[in-house]
Amino acid sequence: MRLSKIAREFVEAVCKNITIDWTMRENVRAQLRVIVKRILRKYGYPPDKQEKATQTVLEQAEALSAEWAVA
View 1 (cartoon, one colour):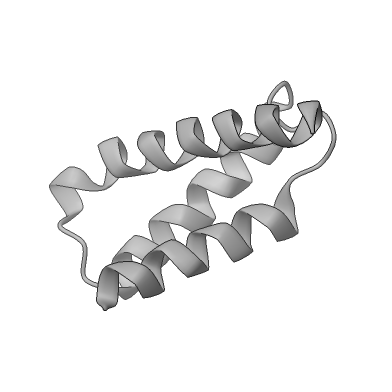
View 2 (cartoon, rainbow, N blue to C red):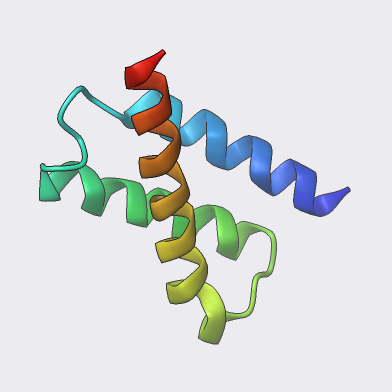
């Protein structure tokens, strides 16, 4: 249940904060990293694993946004 809440918050946060060229703009990517880390901390995710989890979330968001662009 907690994992599904985290996933929903990630999707909401990414959808609210992405722009057309977000994958090329470092300031937008940095903002998303901060948001993802806040969500992870909120749910007690282990600090030593946050960096990898943040990178994974951003990679998945990039993959999804590529699919959205094609559709």
